[in-house]
Amino acid sequence: MKCTDIEQQSLLYIHDELAPGERADLEAHVAACESCRRGLEQARRLDQLLRDCPRPEPAPELLVMCRQSLDEALDREQLGWRGLFRSFVWHFGTLPATRATAILTLLVFGFGLGWTIRPHLTALQPVTTGDNSSAFDAADLNDVRIRSISQVAPDPRSGGVRITLDAERRVTLEGSLDDPHIRQVLVDAVKGYDNPGIRRDTLDVLRARTQDPSVREALMYALHDGNPGVRLAALQTVGSMECGPDTHAGLLKVVENDTNVGVRTAAIDTLVRHLEEEGPDEMVTATFERLANTDQNPSVRMRCLAALRNLQGSDAR
Amino acid sequence: MDGACLELAGKAFTSGQAEEEVERSLIRRAQRGDRAAFEGLVRRYDQEVLRMALRIVPSAEEAQDLYQEAFLKVYRSIGRFRLESKFSTWLYRVVMNVCLDHLRRQKTRNETQMPEGGDGQPDFAHTIPEERPLLNPERALETQQIGARLQAAMTRLSPRERMVFELKHCQGMKLRAIGELCGTSEEAAKNSLFRALQKLRGDLQDLV
Image 1 (cartoon, rainbow over the protein chains, first blue to last red):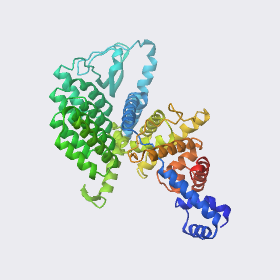
Image 2 (cartoon, each protein chain N blue to C red; image 1 turned 90 degrees about the horizontal axis):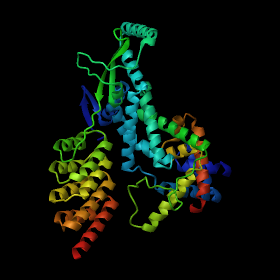
Image 3 (cartoon, each protein chain N blue to C red; image 1 turned 45 degrees about the vertical axis):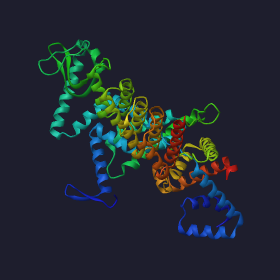
Image 4 (cartoon, rainbow over the protein chains, first blue to last red; image 1 turned 60 degrees about the horizontal axis):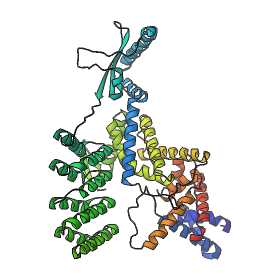
């Protein structure tokens, strides 16, 4: 092996990408060549430097935003022509060949018929039927989420077209947070809705009614939400409300058990803010002392130490 | 848990096999248009996808765009995914193609500058390191400055060099696997890695 080969080979050597024979050759060469040994050492130092560099980690808030915007994009995707086409193709593909041929023939016939009568078609007309389907104006289509289209047929009586679809109508509720029904919808959203962005927005709204027992219960529930961004939002709201021993116990659970270090340290800060106003709590102090000595995470240990110092300072004052 | 077994449909599964079976079931349901199943797949991998995007592009907005574009592509083409191969490999290939296209477009527009904070340094406010070296503030500042220089040096790599470096250095992948992921040979991946490390060494010479 020549010195000119060593530069590339040493990079591959430290990344464990050399074959055993090549490794042995390189090690033998480096043992005998001072200049290549220095080159290898420099490559090792560069590798170590690159490994020590802090790598960007996604913030929980960014992940929440990403999931929310993807959710909205998927909504648009599903309701657009692409989604309907995909759904149609899949259902069509699962049918037996004879039935699929019959449907295709009918579709071609229907399209031909529609094309023939197209001069007679006017704007989309509202429809009323005797079955469960409801009538709506074309303008209402903006508020409707179409789940599937079960029938598209020309209407010989009106010369128009009849579309039968399964849809969910979007409903907007307006009311005061004093209304228990409105509060219940929001509490249910915090506890059960699967979109973390909505859960987070709901917590922001509920911040104004933290004295209500059902809202307090929902907040304590959200402290253990599956999404760290939602847990952080719940902590912020809990931080702004009047607390009691039950709240301290709930926050301590987060400090001790949450899987996200950012959420744990935020819970420590929330507890400190409360205790500075409400006075000492032995259970909290004892937990902070224990975690300051034994917690595996250095950030948590440091934050508990700082919290104990803060609390001792506020006691002295 | 690796050694743990559970009984599923009359067959003995290790936890790893059971996990794979759950994923395959999610994929099959997603292929039939089940949105909840697709979201289940997204939740399994989206943190890693976002982490990859943040390593490739410097701003949170761009990373968010890449995240969305990648998962929309997966959503549109999941029907064509064959269950013989690993879903994660297929997904990362999609992510990587989206990232490469983005970097190429950016290069064409000559807009590869880092977004800057008020002090002229790259703005990393959108990222939260989980473990901060709180014990030694000087060391913390030094590490942060080296990180900023590395990010700046990364912008001078070509899209493929940057991608190969990230996959090797951060994901710890073998060059052969990187070559397969990039649709190129192991030798070409090796050359890209070598060029990337040479450029980085040139930019960070005074630190090594």
